[in-house]
Amino acid sequence: MIPCEVEGYPTPSVTFYRDDGAPLPSDRAAVSSNTLTISNATVEDSGVYKCDAVNEYGAAHAQVSIQIEGCSLGQYSSAEYIVRSRVN
Image (cartoon, rainbow, N blue to C red; front, side, top):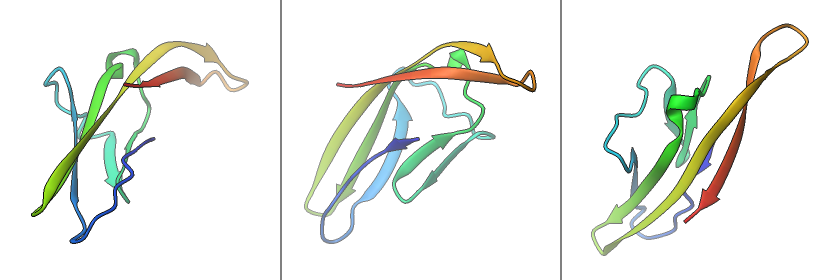
């Protein structure tokens, strides 16, 4: 989950995107309450993610670097990826 915490009046609209221009995985990405969630993340989901918050009075921008480092097999042989993030 990648939150984009915003405040403003009128309430800003929030948009998430990848810095490299790659599309968000439409079948696995969802935005709810200004938080981007990518289900079943893979190594290919690693990268810099940005959020823009915009209203009629201005805009704010934030980004975070997400690195999917690998996977380990759990008790039921389902893959669990290790996710590390760094706020830039």
